[in-house]
Image (cartoon, rainbow, N blue to C red; front, side, top):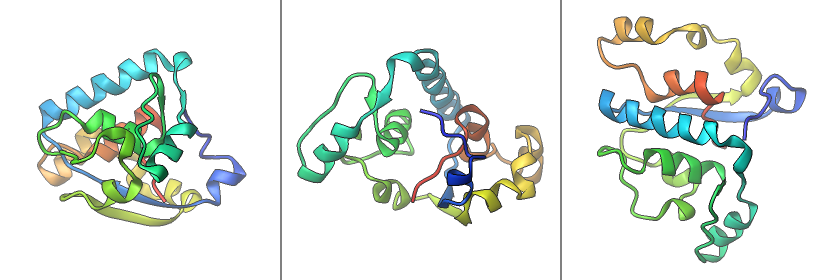
Length: 150
């Protein structure tokens, strides 16, 4: 599900943006996983029932249906550096926020975040600045809009 982050509703929404650095091989696997999901986007839907499953601690793992934190957990699931104790269908935004290595880089309105200059950096520029593989967040944003968790 892609949101129009330029709409009035989204632009005025409060958000928190996180950065999580992963190895190049993990990054490539995550991108491949996301592209696979995007290629089948017409088959995917939002997993509203899964939200009740998290609340009631009942596994409701529907094929081709995910809620936001379930999506993030699914694409990070096989990464050596991102191990979750719970199954993706039970992962909450708090679980992701509290991951070791997760770094808060922005908190505020989504509209204000869009105007920040660091959004225009490309992968090579970020690598030159840091001397490392650019963060998961900087590269994924161009693929699936923004990694936003309240």
